[in-house]
Image 1 (cartoon, helix red, strand yellow):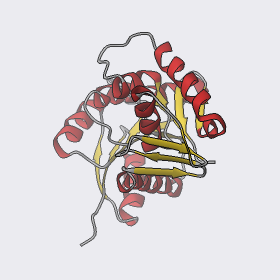
Image 2: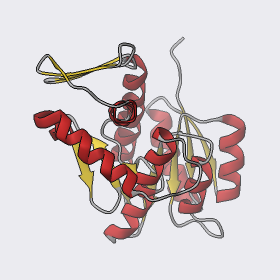
Image 3: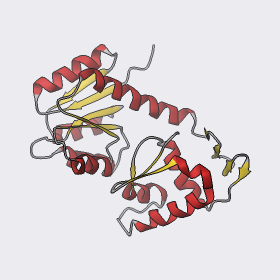
Image 4: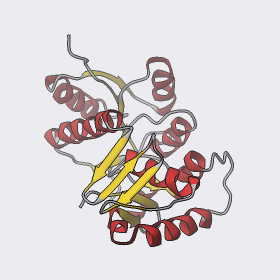
Length: 226
């Protein structure tokens, strides 16, 4: 029996939540709905959905607050729904840990496609967790080896881990704060220039292969396949 992915839709507008639920269920997902941030957190912690579609404009506890709370203990993929059109609002969501966003009013078919793509990306990461090959760049995790055009690149342990974390989450924006926690294991925020300094050194060592490392202004970094 195929694995049925579980999606939690969080929106305080019942009509929007029902439309999202209907289209996702038709696409083969198991779907539950929550109408506020507190219920969403309780549901996510108890049932551990595979992905969360989260409205930014929830009452009392908005989508940003919910995302911050979730990211303290979970890496569940989050697609943020937002009626806010300002770029700063969208970047804020990505910066604190959302994986993608879609602007209201949205196409239900586009939402289904975004959900499928994000879940597929996560499955790909698990399947290739020991080895990443992107064009001329090879990352061999068990051997702690990085090569560009077959030539070994000498990286420090921290540089290697930073590159590997970004490759594992390719296409997804990683904030500086998130990288500090996942690479350096810092629970409290310190000077985020630490990340920038290591990224600069990593790019210098990778040379032409540094094109896979993309800077998202005001947010952080992501690994791109080009």
